[in-house]
Image 1 (cartoon, rainbow, N blue to C red):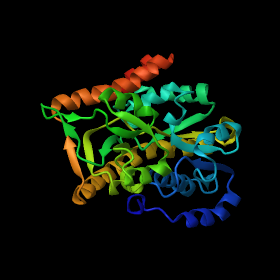
Image 2: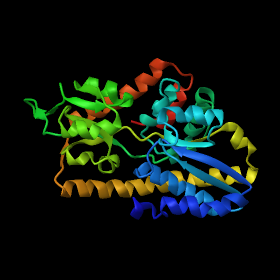
Image 3: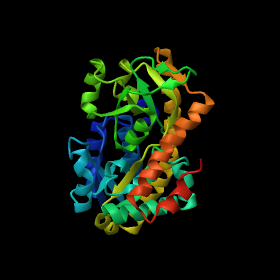
Image 4: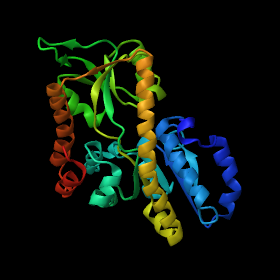
Length: 328
């Protein structure tokens, strides 16, 4: 991702920022849900760099680390309590507390479109009400997930891919979808997936197209099912008290960069998706494209599972979010 974001090394970010931080009027301490070397964390650090460059003498973001600093499942509460001031990560980590996260998972519009049609404002209110934090940006939109398999899947008498009884590493956002396909969702922690694939203890995994090489899972996952489904749900959130304590100039600058980064990160990742797709094909990955009929059934099952889950969980924002984020 260095070629994509062209950012300084992490050591340079931290050490080089120290004199500036000392002179800044406002500072925010930030943490990410991902290890620093992963593409999504690198994009967020590009956002940090941009704020710090344009906010010199006004506002600075002090990046303190990823899950090694604060475990993923503790970060949003640490943010709400003011242990840190800014957090970046998936909203779907908090589905149990904020079912509205599925609006991003099941989105078929870009974050930029949702800014214009009012969907982002509805999500801001959901973040305030359910998590007690302030949402300022939805970045890395438009990165879809795929089903990847170790071995070539079976096909039925009509030539359709048969997902029945395949054990696929899952996560909550697509468990119901995999079950609808007839697959068996398997819960495996990310650090253990590599070994599980190596030993063939399950048949495949759901994964964003960007993450497949970052995690080195492509060494074992040699078949990809197209089309992609869902969308990334990565938000930048801040502690409300810390946010209000900033000067109006600081808040305006951060919001301005967040809006710009929604478009910039979208464009960057579309280019990275194209490059990753080309590379994995060159390295021997077989892409199986479902025919029109099966692809339509596949996508309907995916998106219906996300929106049905939100509706069943109960939220007064369901109609507004579906209108803003879903146009299939």
